[in-house]
Image (cartoon, rainbow, N blue to C red; front, side, top):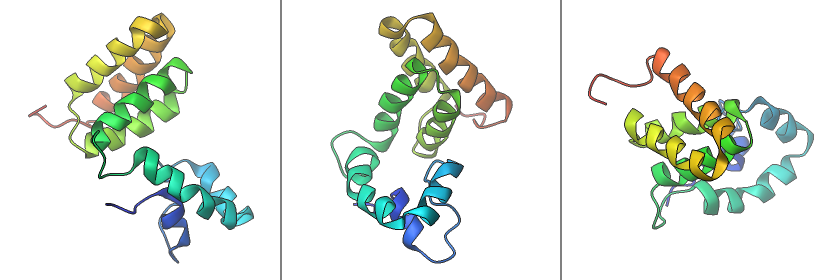
Length: 129
């Protein structure tokens, strides 16, 4: 099982970032209360870690749908990046956003589609996807 959760990264001296997703507020929290960040690690590993029935790619797609519903485009982008790192294609992410739009409505679709479009414009997908 991978142990790359946010708190584990915080504990390493010279770690590049506390947040697996690049959220800057976690850097601040780690400085202010490292014990809290360490305490969150087991829950993070259960939620987003590897070695479960659902792959990381599919776990990220669930998270993407929820964040899109909440209108958190920055979070959708961060979690799409990790899904891509774990093999998600542009089409799979589009279908995840489309699926989330059924219960979440137009704003959910808009948030997800705009995030996906931004990543596509940045070149996040290679020609094979």
